[in-house]
Image: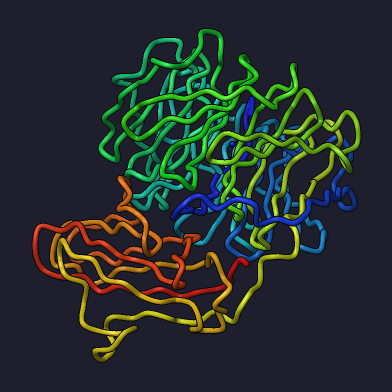
Length: 448
């Protein structure tokens, strides 16, 4: 997200490990308006591939880019008039992709601002939100058509309707921890669609009139979503078990968009309350309003490349940033583990099917012994068969959900925040019928 909604992120940054809470010593909200054309209507928002944050201007018919220092650049060339850009995400091709809500098109914009629009194969109305999928494609919702669409980086579209209840009104969509895509239905359900297009809907546990809206993958292996009608935040496990949370959310807040933060919590916008909410994986809510101008009418929210949260203010015509404190420390990107190297504690041999291997991350690559978590990029390569990895802190139990999935011969990568055990260690478990897979971790920072 991410992302925006009725919000749509994905952003898509995946977070894994045990619950990470309490990292931020304080939150400071800043707003940026310089460079945003009047009445632009910032709506969807995502972390870009270039270290900046990108957003849609639903009323201004533009795409905007804002640097971590708050410098804005707008792009309009190549976007058809009246398109109303809405959802936005970073694609697997290094470009930014967005939906055109009124144009029924998908747009692609390069980091240099070159736009390409795609409409062939899109039959539904109100193309709303978009997310990068685990299969290397982009997936999007078609709100009025009750469809889920898939578009390849080359622009080839496939639509799926089977299994989606008539009048569902698909809203937001995100990649889940189980290798599927998950989406909200404003009519009161959560949907799951496999990369092959098989849909399962879940409604048990969702209070009638909830109107699920934003959705994101959480740090606990579950999916978290907002309920604009129910004024709640809810989570759903990969098996479909729903838990709803209301305590701490001010009545009439209208939670809209939600994103996983780099601090291991979930953060959401309150469209009706001009507030940002934070909910821990245990369901404890804190709301923040200081620094947000009244009438902001908040929509999208995303975790930024600077490890802060960024959000869009449709009514205020601003981009906001909530700083999570000074307890995240960057390090020069450093490869701490590569099993392709000679045999050693951080090298070979390759990981073996159905076995655990421990690695001590602390005191390597500038990560101090006091670190409780690291930000990293995880890569697997040369797997001999289909499988997945499950990563967890030393001393913890094996989690139920995987961190990374692959097919034989694939090279796959994902970003993750990894909690460390008491010895500064992680455990890697390989689920694979037989054979081996090589494992690589590059670290970029740590929490303490």
